[in-house]
Length: 318
Image (tube, rainbow, N blue to C red; front, side, top):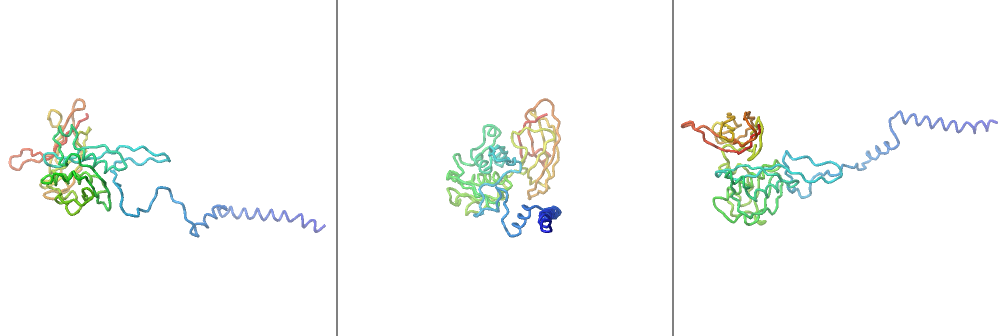
């Protein structure tokens, strides 16, 4: 009789013990899987990282990683997003000085695409506004590599076909176009895979920056808006300047030449040191959208007449 009662009580005690263990485990806030995961982490089992991340490249050389700040973010998801156009700028010559013009290029190799657009030369509208190029027709981009904010640009031999006074101008056009991208500060030139030899300051492989071409930069270089842009009031204007006491004026005129705005601007520096400026210009124009011009100028110290430093043809939206 005692043996039967003992045998009958064993399942009850086992059940009670199981219920007690389950209650203790729940009170600790864990599960069997979480405990196993924690143990794996503590013993050094690698933890998976999201795909697409990397600690760098083995060579340290990045192929055209430059992307403007305005570029759209990459699409999420498992599908491959179609390349989308990115707004860029190329630099031609206007009255012997550098002048920016807009281009739409497709990523991800946006800097290379901008340089190819530069090598193609000004379009008909730009030529009609006296934009020109010192780069010989037929010049091709062989490769572009960026490392430590220095772009190595390898161009075809045609680029070096016309040495002389225009050499500095053609170098400056490439340098300003490439350094428009935030990932590039200077440019090293190669021609047909070899260091440039007959291109003045580029000889010997020294990387060049914008400061090497101050004599080719207008006293006021408008970086935005760009030639042909359609703008609305108020108009934001930014760029660089090197004027006496850092002062100049910006004038917005309509198609008839009538001034619809004229404001004084002070750059961050001047009188031999190039500074920056970023201003908002209110204007009032009547009628529908029409042609206009943004003019940067200073007043002559001799007789007060306007000395034009840069002009940007625009379309004024009302």
